[in-house]
Image (cartoon, rainbow, N blue to C red; front, side):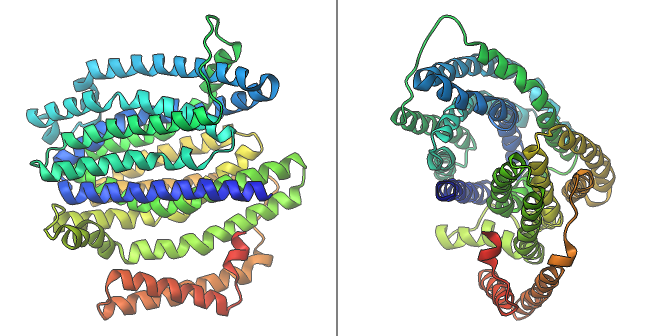
Length: 504
């Protein structure tokens, strides 16, 4: 248990460092470039390698790759593990290099798939810039795939911090790219070069640490049979990832029909929204998966249900006030992040216009309204995975995808880009509801936890009141946040709710 806690702390610290620098990166981009058609095209061009990253690095690939990597060490020691890893890296490199070359050759066609709006397609200079950005950034896919394999090796060898925190180096290089652009006529190509530089630096660090933990390249003419098995196991998992990525692609295509800048407004809003989601909800999901898997292995349904109940309560305690804060302070938060920081640090006006602040804050409200359901869906998916049931989450995700498309087509007619953000939240409601409905042998224990929920609701009502009062008297957003946090946790303490004990 002690080892698990230390590993959790190290991985959480790595995730937090990466998220913080990721937020700084997005703020730097917003301050230097604002939210325009140029940033729209950049985010689309960057999304293309990241789209394939989900297939070949995270999710599907990691679930197929990691068990074999662990098994190789157990049965054949470091040599067998290193041989398998070397061959997987070679296969991945060849595969994604071919994909990267194809996309670079047909970059104009690929870009037009994402940017369907006439305002983009009719702008020859803008589309030409997008093609150049794809040519520069597409090799990042090759780098990140190799990084993903070595990060998996480090995790298997109980080195968690570097594998998670190394992406901070990528974010730092992009921040430097934004600074160079700020100093040199705001050429967004500096950001693209920052992407490649960050990928190279991240790979160097991860590879050096892997060498330290015992990796040595092992080459043989004949490929290990488990390499083939890895890619065969990858196929079923791709269904779930495909639905997730299809959601993203459809969202980008629909947004391109709206006013220029809409893609950027949604990007900036989603990044702020994903901060609490990533730092707390995803981490809680990972911890819950481990504990649920143990309970399942012991066939202890009482413990399994207790873990789910505790995870539900933890989400309610943390995510509900975060939701209230993001919705109630959305405008002030966006203004602080993308305008006030520029004045404070650079002593100059940000390129992020007042209209962009307003449009991004509206999108943030729409995203934040579904935060609890995004969090619940993540948690409930882990419950199914702990029981080796991957089909049910895929089915639920498919129905949520259909709902997302329908909601987007309807709501964008009335709310423009904010309608697409709201559609995502409503789809999360559908997904979480379907997952909850399909869980077997579990019902949330309202009788046991009802009093705690009522106390949490009361604390949130009081916190919301303090937020509104602070706004009424013109209290600056940072002080307002501090006041709300203090009020919320003091009220919980007075009502004898020990948050740390609950989270533990």
